[in-house]
Image (tube, rainbow, N blue to C red):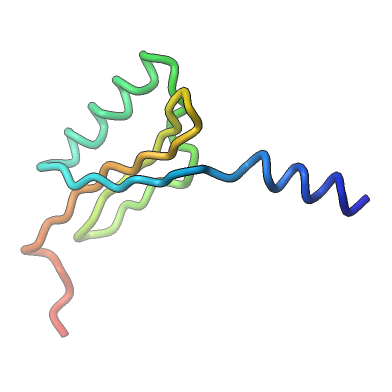
Length: 79
């Protein structure tokens, strides 16, 4: 029924989504490892692995989604 699908969709939303810039790809992975070790859900969204950007996401115990990301400005497309 429509009510079931609406309920399921609401259960998969996040109250807050936060992006954090970090200094390296390793810092992204370290933050995800720490979040997972403390009970968070890691890679709740597909990782982004582009030549100039790397990001992963995790959900904390309150349901907030965090996305640490690293930008390599030397590899940004020039346009």
